[in-house]
Image (tube, rainbow, N blue to C red; front, side, top):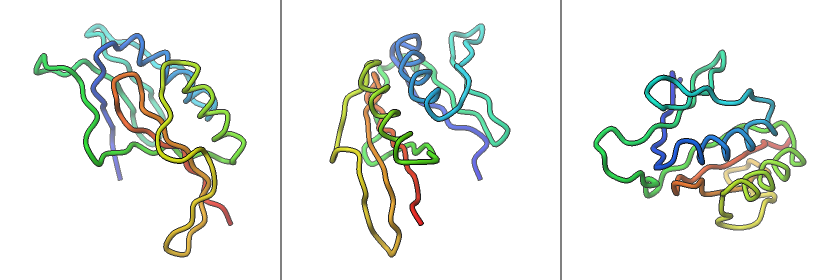
Length: 126
């Protein structure tokens, strides 16, 4: 459905450190910085990227916006959350754990990245 997702980052290097850590836990390679100072994580299904806002204004987390990353197990989500906290992220919402809604049971965790973007790791339970 998506070709790419780009998030604003005031300090791309600091955000890269955060995302390299949390995405490594989920099995992804480190981001690549291009000649414009943007960071890209290339996967077969799409691209996740970080960039200073092109309008020169500070980056900000979108009110009501969340970027969700799929995880294969609750243990990976716990490790994802710990890696995020150790690399400049802040915990938000409830601690990592099981949530239920609409007949679906999920294990998930939320963080804010160094620029305030809200990210989540989610595992759908059977």
